[in-house]
Length: 148
Image (cartoon, rainbow, N blue to C red; front, side, top):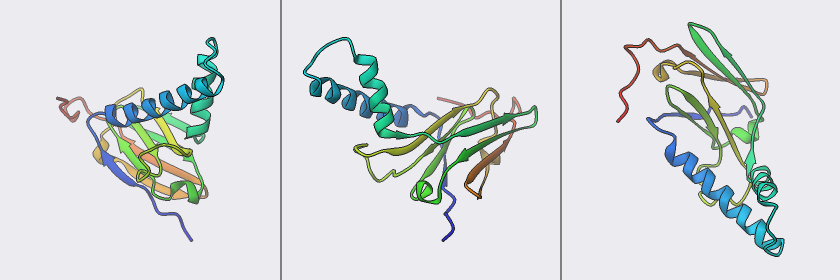
């Protein structure tokens, strides 16, 4: 069975999704602190362990030229199940299992910040041989969307 290409969602801001990710990591890191008997001094270890437990971060290759940007995510068919791509002019996010709002199990999540703005409407997505490719043309200064 061939993996379905994730839906693409154009957003003006990643604030909501990043806030959800941060809150989930913060909650799990605090739980780890409690599990350790509330001993201070290991906060960074707790945070990093929470990230490792909750986030499946695939390998990524970013290629930017004056004319286009390409982002290749190395993922499995199973990881793409129920995944979504959120796009702004300056970032592409691959996120999985959006129906699971509790973030209690590992979730596919990779944020790729772009050095150059893209035209989100030009984004083309393809999946082949374990690589999800996202290619977009560079934004012209007159095509950047207005942000509120």
